[in-house]
Length: 217
Image 1 (cartoon, one colour):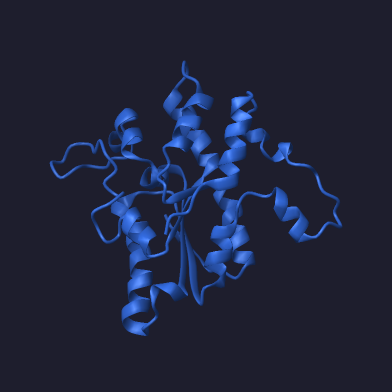
Image 2 (cartoon, rainbow, N blue to C red; image 1 turned 45 degrees about the horizontal axis):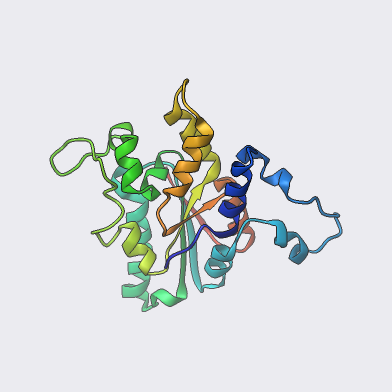
């Protein structure tokens, strides 16, 4: 299932275009009276349709990961779906699964252009079949636990924007432009993934909706 980055990234891009720092995003939304309803508040929040979809499923889970570890988080997600399919006769349509990425785990959801430009294979110690640092995202497609394959089965992928900001500063280095690199990273997140303001808040929001949480660390 493809989950667009939608409203959050749209507002983020607009702010960047006029020179506003990404951290100012929350300040750019109007403050609401404490007595306002959640329905009113939500008009100013990042898009959480992914959360509503996951929370409404009978079997649900959010997996959070900040590591690559040979695709462990993706394989855990595949196991969750396959075991429910095969041992409990639960079809994909009754399963809600989100995989949230941050820190090194962001490499899962960045496209080949970013892997080549900022050699992420060398940075995160991911090797290709020949044993050299990977210059393309090996987790994007091909295997049953790939981002593409899992997305087609309804899995939602999330990218932590706070981690994208930190990664941008790291990749830009002392003489580079971190805001420019951040904009580039956001634009090159895989189409199967959605940028969310902070993974810790996404996890809190998911648990408030009754979605169990698993860390792959």
